[in-house]
Length: 126
Image 1 (tube, helix red, strand yellow):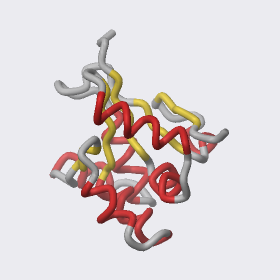
Image 2 (spheres, one colour; image 1 turned 60 degrees about the vertical axis):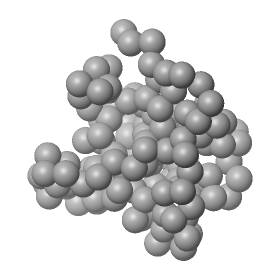
Image 3 (cartoon, helix red, strand yellow; image 1 turned 90 degrees about the vertical axis):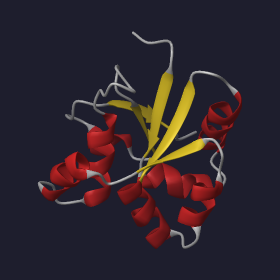
Image 4 (cartoon, helix red, strand yellow; image 1 turned 135 degrees about the horizontal axis):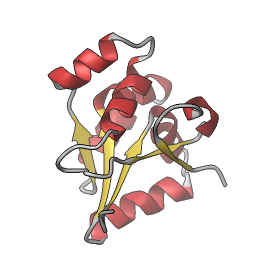
């Protein structure tokens, strides 16, 4: 196991952050101030969050502790096979990579939607 923490914000976590969710705020703060903490926003999740809460995409793009994950070819191929782009891009990004050898946690306000999938979930609800 790596001593790094990698967290992906799904569209529900991005929207919740825009509504003042304390857990997401703390994750973002840690990513900006502590070594070994990384928080990511998959592009497709950002689009869905911005549809629900206009302006959130620009806000997250400006935060120094957030890494925006592009929809590269492997991600696009994963998304093409699924019904919802945001969930597919987030799940794809949670898989292990050379940068994230243990994969990433998915921070979400709806943990039940990830049940039965091979991902680690971080429930952001109080």
